[in-house]
Image (cartoon, rainbow, N blue to C red; front, side, top):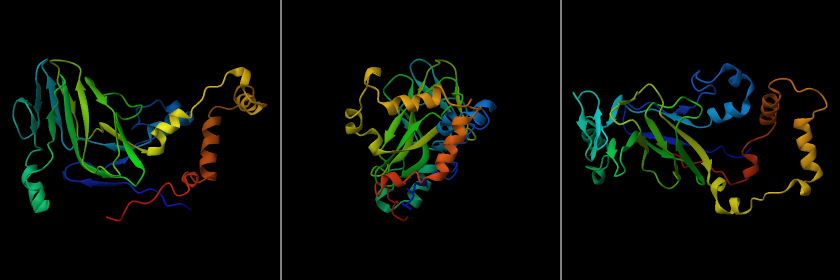
Length: 261
């Protein structure tokens, strides 16, 4: 059996929750019928690691500036540039090699675009060679009101910097609350072959007149089966197929384990 890719997270802010695989039902927030019968939705929902803010923090865009508030500070503070996580800079300097002292990553950074703020998870990620992480909002879960995620595809097999997300605040004058107990980011493993230019250049569109007998037979199995398909038939078939085969076998050497820590 091929080696299973190994993903590794370095937690630099101790209060940050450990990443965990996303729930198949988005923490109970998707309909029960969908969780039971719709395998496509379930697989998308649980594809990735859920990441949390390292502490409760509130953000507010007043139309010109971004303001922030979190314990132990009182009142709203202007985010004119970047701020450190509370009491973190000294802890970073104590743990890091001498050459890194003074270079602790910022927790919040105001970006030049209006209402856009960068939030660090407190984590650094390492993926196996040939694997990246797609950072996006948690799949199929309700969005945090007043927030839009910028998605990012990071080649974390070679770039091992702070794992952060850029957020756009969309409701001027209304505070946005990021809660430490609620995941706000999804890190989805993606093989780099999946977004290589050659993959898209080789794609083709075939008209119905040029469809093969195999195309029609496959379509008939879905649209006109010999027997009525019970609810959840696709989900049952997909689960059986996953049990019968190794998902990494097709890569035959394209996946390797990450170096031991």
